[in-house]
Image 1 (cartoon, rainbow, N blue to C red):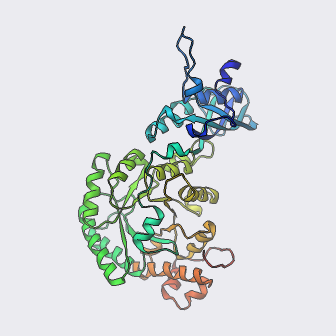
Image 2 (image 1 turned 90 degrees about the horizontal axis):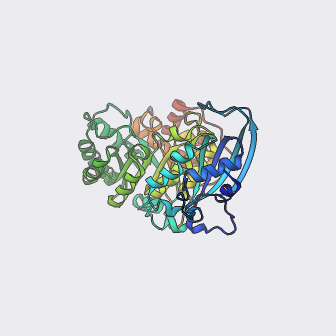
Image 3 (image 1 turned 30 degrees about the vertical axis):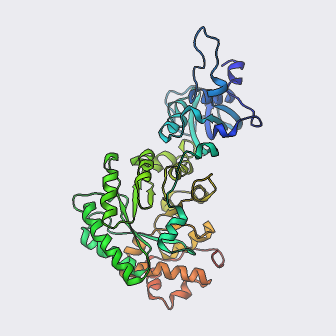
Length: 442
């Protein structure tokens, strides 16, 4: 690119029309001049050819993505990961902030992703590795999206739970259990104190456990549990399927008594979620299959918080995400960034409930709470409830007892002396992880 070409893909942050642009933060590794690589990155995702031959015109002022900030982080002898057909020479790692005019694609998630995560950025001259780190949306763009229909406040109102985390449980065994014993396990967990008993993300409309039969039984069991306990409950049914079946499966599940629905966001697609949001009568819950394939590598792909923001934008009321602990292979900072993407101010878009999960049980509840420093989260054990030695009812009770101890500032081991379900959980799943000093939840 010539000097004039480079200048056409640069903008002054002080004079930029912020309402007309998304701000995109990328990390990239390149050969050659980083300024030229950043200009190519802007060009390839917007107006790569900005004029016709022999015509005096320039589409860049209105349609080009433009570099606002560029930071060269360092030099290294090679790319962080193997890159095919790479040129020889020094590799420079960079961070860049780009302003992309959203008039190029409009308020359409598939078209947005085609621009900022498509052929242009990931097949850009000179850039061997790239990762989209964040997207910042202006109010003018957000105004075209409905976002969550219920959100955190709506879900709390439905459950009449206002001052603590919301307790989920993944009914286990998750695959292979026929509808009748599956229903019995969910019913017992509600009696023990769970707010939400859910289908596993891999269990949908299976031949051996059809959605129609499972929701019929669990819908009736939920209503019985509500009568026995005197408090609202939710059965979260998984309707993940082909897009052309989603609305019909929604209607079957809701008519049978499922009062929230699980959809695997990326396998189904965010545009399908947005369609379902307009149709739904109950909260929508997103799960994270396929997201790690985009986000796991530190220097390539798409950061998980970008996908979390897009799930909220599409209309999920709850977003289940990889949580704390070694099994999920997600650092604490990334978990907190995803939680913030659910709860932080986002124009007129309601907050959605973050549910960081993975191998949780009563003994890990305090650690999750301390790390997040808020009660606006969901806690989602699987075997921690349904593999409890005293059964699902005892497992659910152990979660509630753990929260009672946290809320009262009592050590779990001390509270367990008078709570057999909590004592049994500690014996079965312990030892207890280390936790910060006691304090009352806020």
